[in-house]
Image (cartoon, rainbow, N blue to C red):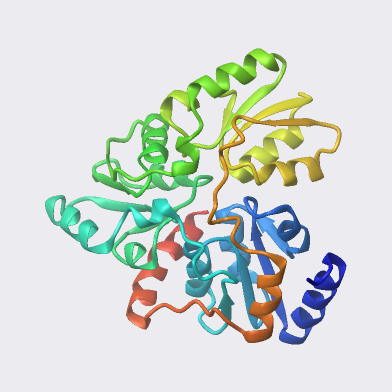
Length: 304
């Protein structure tokens, strides 16, 4: 087994040789976040993927994120070090079913959460992330009906925030569904001074109990600007590593230790090294699908 320091050294050397950049999501294991050139939520990484001056993008996240990098960088090689790192929520929506729904509501605008496959994006009008969903939905003319796919919890949260009626796809994040109102109540009792911060993919009953609801990037910003010293974190536990690094004097408690995404934890330093050495697995999207899927992603980035 290669020692940690040696792995990091080898990754750094071959990364330089390949002119590669490592993008890591906030839910990645700590050692992956620590070697990432850029760490962030889906929106931040989408933007960074479009801006990076590199020949190779190593995406440490799950497949839909790497696909977004492919869409925004047609001339670059995008590697996903673990080919099986997927998203159960994204798998709950498929292009064929979405086409059927669109036929029943031909006047509707399809707002597609980025946690979706390229094929589903290709059937959509505009994408959003958890951090910009409210502004994206608010930008749609009020006389247009909205289909929101695939997360019913994020869609319901944005529907309440904007007052816009929406047809919600019945998908959800299994990890965020594990966070229950009872967990929040229990932690509030144990840590009465702590602020409760949750992700909008959580159940509506959990969101109602929070002091703040936002994306992982929003949670990081809230903590950095808050005078509070302790926080109960209602999202995937990987974010706590970033929170501790950026706020060493503050205290963080997971709402539940069960909020762990197995797919996000599939990537390892060894897999990153092997991926850079072999230049595999490469993430590819068919030309027609890529052309159609890029449009809603670009519209999202244009709005911001």
